Image (cartoon, rainbow, N blue to C red):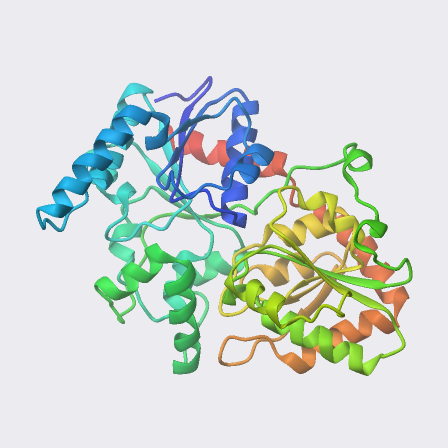
Length: 438
């Protein structure tokens, strides 16, 4: 193993669909490559790739490893896979080939350490790797383990303990994993969680259904807190920014912006309903709701929005959110059930946009750091895991009628943002990887 000089790092993701965890994986891999390390990205879901996101955040210095990078072999594997299925065998030859590709990559590129952006559970490919290889594995928990804990399930622990390190993205997550936080999980919360896991977190959902264990088991793998980082856009915004007139937004309009996957977890329905309520409370004040993202919930809301509601703008997925965030006066993130440390809040802070967000996971550490003035407003969570609607509307109303409060939180957000830069994040990971490979 290398104590000095460049390391050979394999970054592993389940797929590369648009998500904050994948943006972090791509950005961090690029930052580590810029530090002089040899970085490889192993994408297990080669059919699930957001090309725009990859182009935006992944450096050409990072070599991508995936089945579709070997077209002929991939085609043959799919043909054999189809034949196996026709024979009635309940086994995927193509998935087996992906595992072989992982082992080959470890051997061929003499990988020093694997950095997983996925939970280690029973059927995880990285668990198979750990069973047959001595290469150390560090896993960043973007909220997967936390969600299973909230569901009252501890069956993941024996597999999580196979890794050499768990990186928590917030102090809250670290305390939860260590058992220092008493997490209540009433049936109504578990019901919401089961729905969210089933629709958006396949690995965690499979773990939940495979061998559920309600008895708390001790996590023995060392847990380290490393806050997510976002690369600075300083010096690039003048060429990226889009004018309000592009979307017929009035200059005097107060723009609420929201970005994220169009899933139940992100709280789009609550943001939409609260916005409609706010317009009723202040009918003479112009507002705009700028929706950045796509998915089933956003599609439903788009269908509910009549053509004459031009104040609600659906942009769909955006490859570069920094083009649109300067249009916003307030950011929204009324998430449900569970959260890690959302990059979009840091990105809003990059543009001095205060944020209203659910008091979930690491979000309070972003919005109200204990040693800095707040950069936004927190919304309490109901026992069923959803944001308190009265508090959400109240927070939006407070910003709508009090520009001084908005401006104060906007200034504060810039100070908070400085704490979550990619350079510090990459340096912390580099230090951890050095320790694990020594």
